Amino acid sequence: MSAETVAVVPMTTDHVDVLMRYEKDMFGSEAWTRAGYRAELADPRHRSYVVAEDDRGDLLGWAGILIAGDQAEILTVGVVPGARRRGIATKLLDVLVQRARERGARELLLEVRVDNDPAQRLYEREGFAVLGRRRGYYANGRVDAVVMRREL
Ligand SMILES: CC(C)(COP(=O)(O)OP(=O)(O)OC[C@H]1O[C@@H](n2cnc3c(N)ncnc32)[C@H](O)[C@@H]1OP(=O)(O)O)[C@@H](O)C(=O)NCCC(=O)NCCS
Image 1 (tube, rainbow, N blue to C red):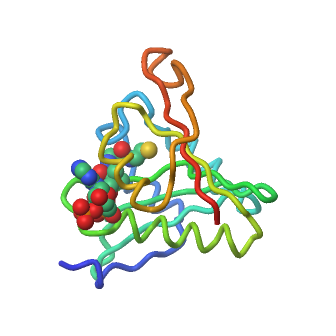
Image 2 (cartoon, protein in one colour):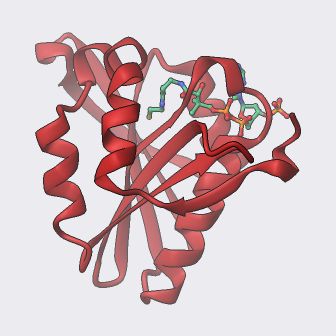
Image 3 (cartoon, protein in one colour):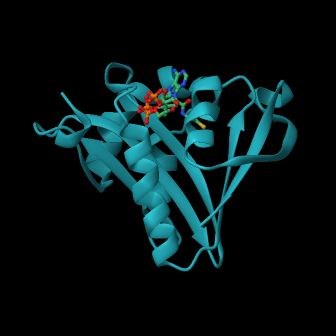
């Protein structure tokens, strides 16, 4: 399957039920709950969530953003293990960047675990630069966050 057959559509509560099968394995101590996702979807004024599906409607990945005034923040990005390195996270980020621009955001921020090399490479390639660190932000104070930023 190539990235060209991937559709990016708004996340629904049905998608949440499907992505919960992967959430714990993919995000470990940072995994969100079903109720957490549902609360995010209940705030469409500030938050926007999308999923990537293949042409059979199978879930390949998802991502979410918080847009508040001229600032936006990537809240989550995940691609299921069998669909990685096909440009799906890039595609999801591009849709969210577009959405943030349309709503007037001028800068985009995110936090990523200091030990999450694949995600940091992805964000660098998407134009993010390191802004700083948050000490002990993850895993009950054991793991730092790298804060990254790009202009929109
Ligand atoms: C990080 C993640 C979202 C990347 O998804 P993906 O769809 O595979 O990413 P893409 O195919 O769009 O990759 C774009 C670029 O990012 C970099 N990249 C992605 N995965 C990488 C890896 N495992 N190692 C090194 N670089 C990587 C590469 O530069 C890649 O371009 P290339 O494939 O042409 O070399 C995915 O690995 C994932 O879901 N990981 C677990 C959850 C997670 O860590 N999410 C981020 C939390 S902040």
